Image 1 (cartoon, helix red, strand yellow):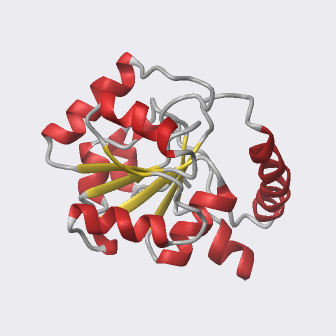
Image 2 (image 1 turned 90 degrees about the vertical axis):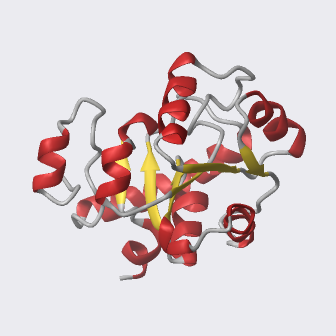
Length: 190
């Protein structure tokens, strides 16, 4: 089924913080390629958060590489990433895979070492699936979106509805979900 193959994420999480050291080790991954807007921060925010800073420090200290790959402008992405000492690729043209390839080249890593984290099925998940990298969909931080994203959300809503009806879309894992249970089920909720 084409919809499942390209539009159903490998995992669906409530918030980026669900990805921790144990999660990365369980999946044998070393790199997080993350979207920016509505994945790490609200699309209309220019400030990072204490929670995000804490998570980034913890993941970097554990030896994981984190890089932002965003369709947004160089100005927007650079401003945010410089504050947090993150590498980035702006104007990535997702779902095309060129931005993901550039990110892995910057880090000198291979696709099989990475996960792609993002809040949109039509850009992040489709791009990850096209690139052959594990895709992790995160619930959008903000309930609002920029105009162009609202168009994507309409179509992705139809896709998610179709896949959910056929039981081909993962259930969302909440942040408080116990890691012990994650291990027992290979990282998936039944």
